[in-house]
Amino acid sequence: MSSSIQRKMTLLIFICALIPLLALSILSYSKSANIVNDQLQDYNRYAMKQLVTVTDMHLKEMDALSRDIQGYLLAPGKKIMTNPKSYHEYLELNSFIDFLSFHVSPIVEGLFVITPEGDILGSRNVNSASLLAADWWNGSQPQQAWQWTGFHSGGYYSSPQPNGPLISLIVPLHLQAAAVPVGSRILVDVNAKAMTSLFQSFEQDTRSYLQISDASGQLIYESAEKPAFSGKDYVFTETLAINDWTITARLPQSEINKSSGVIRNYGYLIGLLSLIAALIMARVLSGNFTGRIVSLHKSMLEFSRGKLDAAVEVKGKDELSRLGARFNFMTEQIRSLIANITRTEKLKNEAELRALHYQINPHLIINTLNAIQWRARMAGRSDIDRMIYHLAALLSENLDISHELVPLEEELETIGHYIKIQYYRYGDSFTYTEDIEPGLERAWIPRMTLQPLYENIFYHAFDDGTGSIALEVYRDRQQIVLSIYDDGKGIESPSDVIKPAPPRKGRGGLGMYNVDQKIKLHFGEQFGIRILPNAEKGTIIEIRWPYQEGENIRDED
Image 1 (cartoon, rainbow, N blue to C red):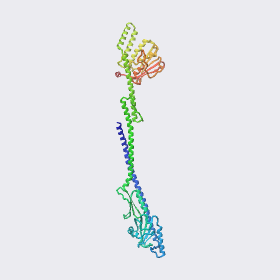
Image 2 (cartoon, one colour; image 1 turned 180 degrees about the vertical axis):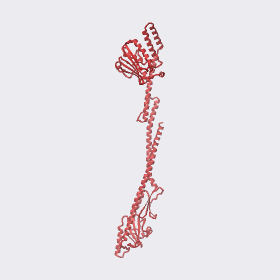
Image 3 (cartoon, rainbow, N blue to C red; image 1 turned 45 degrees about the vertical axis):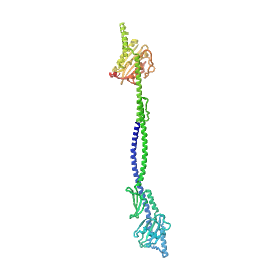
Image 4 (cartoon, rainbow, N blue to C red; image 1 turned 180 degrees about the horizontal axis):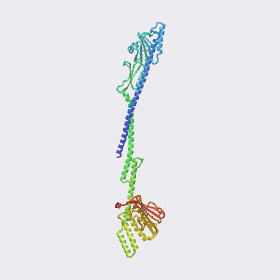
């Protein structure tokens, strides 16, 4: 049973933990993936802007250099001859070459002017044949205002060779006022190593595929590795204003999935750990709960098998603890009830044994007393006649065991016979009064309740029967209160608890203890006899029992 409940509770708690965990994981993954993708797009877009800015800066620097050279060549009075014939022409040529050399920097590899005849004026020595034979040079059109070449090697340079690829700007000169022949062209060579390194760094940093094409769509640069493309790729495109180059960066879907995949994997790991923790927690919680149920079931089983001292250990203040406390209270009540039943049965057995021990023939006693009464009447002894009459009536009530409960008026009639006998015995040395509240005559009371109490007064409270006795009966809510007042010797230590007296020889009735027990057996432990001190002198014996009347009460006895 416990194993089944524990499995069900573990499964229930696990499912209750699993559903919000799955929902939280899915929502967290979706939200995190969207945030990461947005941040990835923003970063790539920012990196693309930076790439365009740096590239545009290099190209603008080349454009500025070409304009400076044009400005120099268009200055009035300038005439540069490739083969100077005079000292003045020689100075003009050297001044121009110095001008070009002045503009050379770690980025600018060379600045040149190439005439239509193939003569080269420049800041560095180059192999003119190699330069003029290059495809990118032969493919240039002099009539165009500007032409930007793609990335190419600088193999036409003399030692030292450029340490990276070059990018060139070719500017044709068509003005007659130029210091060089019409049709000459300006060549600006810039080392593109920093630019290509920037491209490669962008590719590695953003994990994107980079592609640069000119205005005509001719490819200038592209990444070394070309991934498989899909319609879900992120594509960023920028156009350079200076030369209409188009820079395109494509972030493949596979790279996007890598970022969200990391989040997904960590989500799986955290979700798995959370589920394991939830399973352990469910197991512990269900084990604690079912363990207490098993303990309660075990105690109930032991109690049902006769182990009356079985109890449940109560911890906490929850429902199971309250259930265990109620079980302990119930078993305590049952043990108390069994103890009371056992005590009652013991008293009944003792009464039956005493009845068997003192069994006599009631008719023999009554008939004998009637014979003595007849002889006393014949002899003219009326006092003996009346005394035997009252004694016979009293014994008749004592020997009647047909009903245990009798009306109060019947019990008072019986005690009246006892008082008459005491008058014959002591004469007028004592007084007796009764004050009965009307309507209480039919209330039920155990048979022979009052005689032992009066007996106790005459034998213990009075000296030679001298004193006064008063009986008062009244109703207190749903209870009847019967009080017997005497002005005898009194009791040294009155008590609400009536303890059994030691057995004594000689005369005596049931005794006060037996009367108290009879009332408790019939009406409950909360009822019985109390002994109180009389305010003036003597003792008050008070009996309380619930008010009951009707034939059905007697039938139950």
